[in-house]
Length: 427
Ligand code: EPU
Image (cartoon, rainbow, N blue to C red; front, side, top):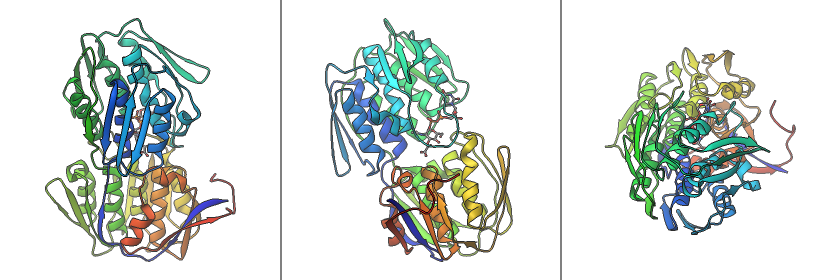
């Protein structure tokens, strides 16, 4: 038996929805707790599957982790294991973020290669090269990244691409290295700033958070802290797209609207009336059929690849033709095959997709291949005639707290159903 969502088409979403802490921040902040002996408290944690999975990863190296409501308490012992190779590791991509902290703290680590989404190849070469520059050896052995150092020293590191994960791992090793590390072409995502903020609260010395150059002055030890996770801009943007697609009126709180400047501008170009509330939230009102807009995914502050499925879903019901360019994950266009099942007029050529808007989509059973594709199919289902079944919803549960409840509160009709699927998996 497996779970799917029945999504009833024809809803107009209206109301207010609160966004809680960002998945792609909290998982890294939990890993950062490994850097300091004692109890670190992280609040505004989202209730999503990936948080207990990450807790299992931390327990596997010797931490105690308690989760109550939106607070996660991690107690890191003096003696940690350097082996993070339990079954939990394979279940989420962010598990690889224990690599930097373990190397920083213990000067050695054996970390199982992570799992995660089917969105394209996700090598670790930049993570490994960064650790090598800091003085560690790094190899892949028996499905694990193995890193070892006599001691870590500061270094000048240039990343080929502003990788979020590589920036985080190198940063978390460099905070305990001797001397100064400069990471150039570093990722600038708000979640990187959040991590830098927490590390600084723990006693790290970091300059340049939010810019392409991070300068880290190594310290001997860090101490535990209490930290509040920033709001999830990707979840916030999901609601913004939902409002535009359903010609609705949705107010989103708990997220900094500045993190979505480009996204909200795209929706304005499509005809939405967007108001922002001093960085604390925003309202999207779409009173007529949205007009088509082009989208190009790029690292922050570009348009996030995580939002590409929503750009495709919106374009499929717009008035006009959109070109969508994917520059980060080549396999993310797999989502389009499922959109075509729903009647979207979309085709891809390399890393470009052309989507000609249709008046109305038509329901069908569809399969989620990753978190964002899953949520994108649900939004498409809201604009489809009939009842769309979205399968493999465990992907959505990994990243969207109370998704069904929030949709229904905004006036949609979406039901979680346990049943036998008609086919085993997508494509
Ligand atoms: N890359 C390399 N070598 C590396 C690292 C990355 O070639 O050593 C390439 C990747 O193949 C990809 C690009 O660099 O083409 C960007 O990857 P990045 O390292 O920035 O991604 P990530 O850290 O693995 C995080 C998010 C993703 C999000 C990307 C891009 C987490 C847990 N995941 O992944 O989020 O798409 O950044 O913004 O933070 C999601 O939340 O649904 C999700 C997939």
